[in-house]
Length: 363
Ligand SMILES: Nc1nc2c(ncn2[C@@H]2O[C@H](COP(=O)(O)OP(=O)(O)OP(=O)(O)O)[C@@H](O)[C@H]2O)c(=O)[nH]1
Ligand SMILES: [Mg+2]
Ligand SMILES: [Zn+2]
Image (cartoon, rainbow, N blue to C red; front, side):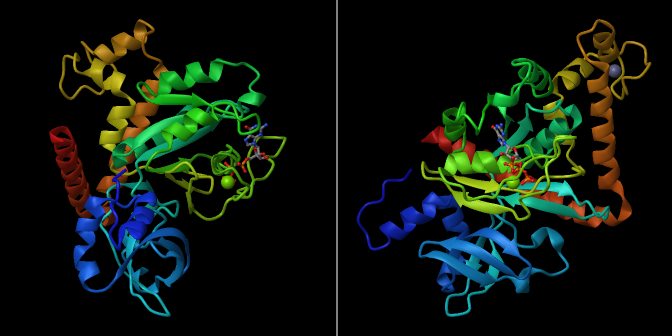
């Protein structure tokens, strides 16, 4: 991106920029740099240790100092960390996350689990070899939108698609305005377009067996991530990938492969839900009552759209369910404290993004 002129640091800074480093992160890192710490991007976390990439290549560092009670601030793949130099590097601090893809933890506590940090694009992998699961796609879209990253739906295994065009049409109805790509890692079709979409940092999300690691390998041009057959009986994967891992792509860009997600709980993502179901919220603006719940109230424009066949009732029900789940999780007593903090961070992130957009326009 930035053409670096010959200075002593030009080669190392261009390597960092290949990992997603930019002027904003550099500014946030200034005090760490002054303290003699080294910027490192987290590749993979393994209990108290993590693999990182730095301007001087890979470094394995001890991150146990940051695995405290505050689970949202546990080091995560995609984070930018400050490492202490020396023979036994330690993660001393994390930079504030520009975005974080977060789900409600599967252990049903109030905690949020960060799946990937500092992500620009969320690639939602959907297999064309099995029936489309509408609710799962909408959930993943809500997480992606709410994080501030840009979602893209990538339909995989086009070579196994028995009804070409049908999956595309169904997904287009679930993801209005979202780019949808059709790919096959087996034949290579659509991979050029996918490579063009993966700029900055992208994360692959989707169920086990969807073909995420196969896409990663195709983009890498080598078999780096293990892949495995799905069970013939139900098309489900075997959870082949068990760690989140960050990969640098030969054509530029950074890709994070993740293990298949079983459940995707949502918490406090009303903004994201509103973006996924934008057409429902647009109808709702014409409801007679401001607090209309779109059930049997008189003058409900949403129910009118269902009656006229413009809006699918199933989609309306999934919208309600997702909003309810998002709000319920966010208002549980033990979650309130965590959310207050989350809200502040979200607000800061949104403010920062607005600032950068503004700055971009000025350039
Ligand atoms: N025919 C065909 N098979 C594919 C394609 N992409 C992936 N597969 C197969 O689907 C199976 C699952 O692919 P993976 O890439 O391991 O799926 P994954 O999403 O990474 O799964 P987890 O790591 O378990 O989350 C493997 O047997 C792949 O060979 C494709 O485009 N066409
Ligand atoms: Mg995998
Ligand atoms: Zn209504």
